[in-house]
Length: 85
Image 1: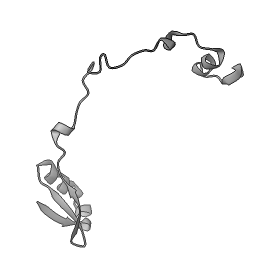
Image 2 (image 1 turned 45 degrees about the vertical axis):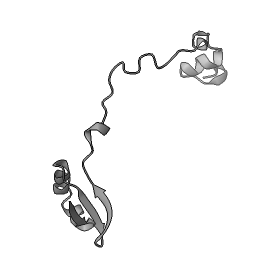
Image 3 (image 1 turned 180 degrees about the horizontal axis):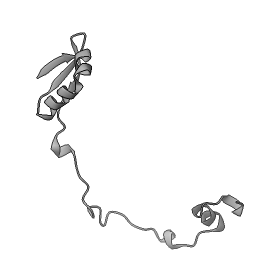
Image 4 (image 1 turned 120 degrees about the vertical axis):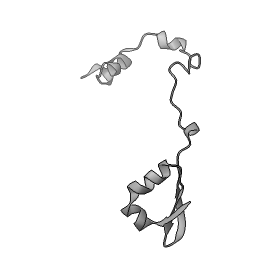
């Protein structure tokens, strides 16, 4: 674990990020008092969505298939309520 004051981290941020990428934890201090921690993100917390993983989780209500009234249709087509454009 490495401790460094904010001004040092600001001056050499890239090198501290490289240290964190290699697995090191950096304690950020303000006037030598710890205030934050820079640490690697654990791989198991980063999830890549899988195509189709939500299959069967949603449903379409019957009202979806009902015709829209004129106001709704105008809104979908980029117009304004009441048919006026």
